[in-house]
Length: 169
Image (cartoon, rainbow, N blue to C red; front, side):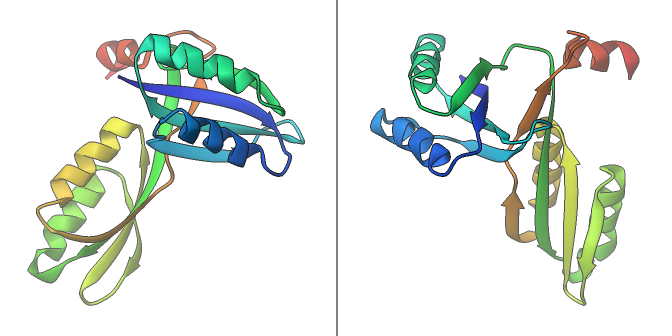
């Protein structure tokens, strides 16, 4: 199972290196990683997606707390949260330009660059939206992809995304 961890750290050089070394020493793969400053000066949030069972992730969290500069670690996998990812895709249009533009419009993505044979598209959304968009465009020629990695903040309302989707869409 994939777990999403949200880690608050002090902004000090080498923090990310120590965290990635911890993962490497234990044979863990980080599938997604996003790092950025928080609302508090001198504190950064690291959001990572890591495969593993619950027991293994609990052990990993304990190990993270032992690292200098790690302030808080949360496994937000099962906590209601807002998750987003940003993706840029370069697509060869060929004779399918209008079909591709139609898909872009449906997903509320943005064309950020266009040339005679290529379109660069920006899409932001939850991971499910990103996967669906990419699958539809796969039948065209995607030549490059750049992804930010998932970012996440827990919902103070404690209402799950599934509940909102099922009752308000």
